[in-house]
Image (cartoon, rainbow, N blue to C red; front, side):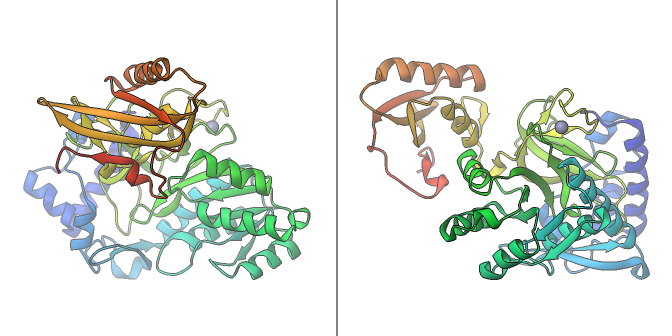
Length: 411
Ligand code: ZN
């Protein structure tokens, strides 16, 4: 999805503000002698920004608007070192609310809905983001925050909550609790808006079946407003995102070059109208792809696929970038194999090799099955793995997805 003229004009405004404020990015542009982008090519030459840049700017180095215009900060829960502080102007808060309102509308949620918000409130962008959008929509907000399952269920029943906003794991916990207590007939939920962590199809089905609701994936990150910059629609074919506020690119995470629409890579985001802390070409390390063509829902907003993982999970086999989730997706199309699998990557005779171990029961022709799986990988990803089919129960059981991929090349 190439950047258009209007978006380029907006980027130029952001560039002049960043340069004037002498922020880390403004400095970087000055060093590179860039003061303007005129063409698509100019844009793709702009330097990236990284999480590390944001962390180095702690505490308020990202602030580009004057102090008197800043109304709030949010912070990302960094796992290591200093957190990232993002300052917001009144307009930023308002724009974010507008985007989030669109998300609810995309999900068919209206001002007659009652929205129970279970993500946390505080420094991070979760709870308050869900709330802003819901208030803009005119819906009734039930601002619970996380935890206290008894109270959650009591409110859900007594206030006849129709929409649940939650992480996938908390939605599942509530679903199981409702099942266990046998109170499903007292629950009025119709829809769930679920945070964008990567979650499997099986978990999705369980939540949706046990609660009897439609689920919508919402996307966002604190560095770029917060949740609400994109959401899936009822056709569940990727997530629409708001390209009047943001420009999204997909790049090859190794070379940094843009990849064609439809191909998997890293999401890179440029804010087009942000005032407090604009970001240009921010590398999210989230993996997805642009979904080409129009959505059956008719919305003109472009789409990215659901998040397929993180760039850190990427492997390079025979010159092809591969993500474990791609292999997983292919394996899911074979009903005769169990949900357990193992991927081993090794370097043999000067070449990278991938071996995939899958399980099935004795009634299947192991050789034919292994051939079919290898062919599916070849046609979808572009190289041929070695596929080993084993008896059901042979592979080690593990909770953690990461243990299913073993890279033996660097051992
Ligand atoms: Zn759609």
